Image (cartoon, rainbow, N blue to C red):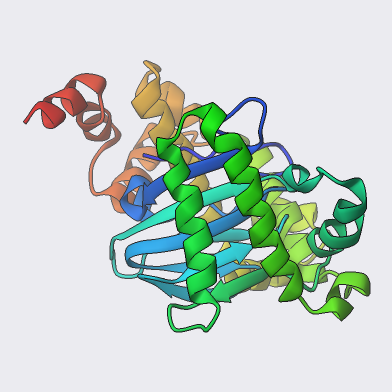
Length: 304
């Protein structure tokens, strides 16, 4: 399972492939995520997705996008986003993350051509369906970057930075200049959504209720529910429980804590209620989940 690490402000901690150069090149499948759904998050990195097989829905600031084999999407810095499966359909895809600092080789270029885009609230993503006229260019760059995984670190560094500059050149010339230099005001509801998600990520172990989540955004319960439904397709309480269960799965897989202690640390005061919620979501008990995902069981599966 993929474990997305979240900071207190709900930004994802992007684990880069190199301690010196902020990038990550990964191959993923939706089945690696709990319930085939990633947690909503944001980060300063630019995120590029290319679909190899299958399909997935990708949500960016409440905009739902269907991505199918051959499609690519580039998500701007600090956008609220997550991918998920529809009707448990599998999806195999490449994820390329890179921090905008990689484009700082010339400060004049960075200030003129990079900063206005990454700080613009009007530029959220660039979508290239397979039949888009510019799709072959973008796909070739992303596939070339993905292929660098086979190179040694010394070989790939210069090639990677060169390819990212080519990609950014294309992004810059396909961005509305008026949105770069005269950015629109950020959607207030998205700001509130981030505040409330950050509150849940920081207080999930506490006995928090709908009133507390709404209060973290200084809004009414009804508006809180409306915003969650609009941007995350879940009620606030359902999202809280989803995150609690996500954390519990990680603890069951990677620690020896008792199931009772895990339930309490995830905000469930009663083991019976935790077990009930867990079974409803994963169709097994916490004990069965731990046994199925133990290192010994996984080793046996691989050997078969």
